[in-house]
Image (cartoon, rainbow, N blue to C red):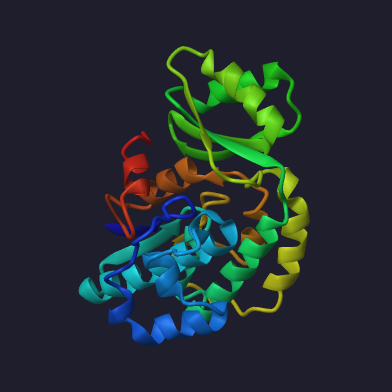
Length: 275
């Protein structure tokens, strides 16, 4: 049984999707209309170096994911029994699963990115080489109230986020653990932490204006690690940790044995580290 995975923010790179836009001119034109700029120019050439900006990175990743999925689903009709996405990638999973219209999903992603960008002063760091429980304990012992587990990506790969200064202190404490490697991530916001709650509240109002259909193919949420139940999860996604380990375990328990991915190998490389 197959599941198709969709990565989130962080996979953006200059040149991505170069081969896709000409194959999907209607969707590309729709995206330009929704966004108010050329998505192809942004993704392929990025002349103003905007791909490092959340407001542009999120729509860019979403659209390249979406165009890649159109090709993949046309090539393998009926292959996928489940869809799942990491954070932003969940919007692509919902489009593939029939829950959201592509244009509506892009509009939501655009507004999501704008609202997330309003929360500044944050930092994030990736932690590799130690179990999540060790990271959690180190944070508790360091007594840093504004640092949180943001992504539970694999058995020994997590992300911490929160106040920028406190994240730096936490990184030093965690780096002292045997086998730990801490790598700062170049973002400005404390994504997937309670510090994002003002953006979550505003986004909840945005979500209320969009229709959500029952899934034609099941989508597993990266917020709960369980099947998607409604737009409330997309609001919670902004301030709740990404439960990727739990999502992968749910998919395996449902019978998934093969994972494919669009737009790179970021998630499939994590899947093999989840036991």
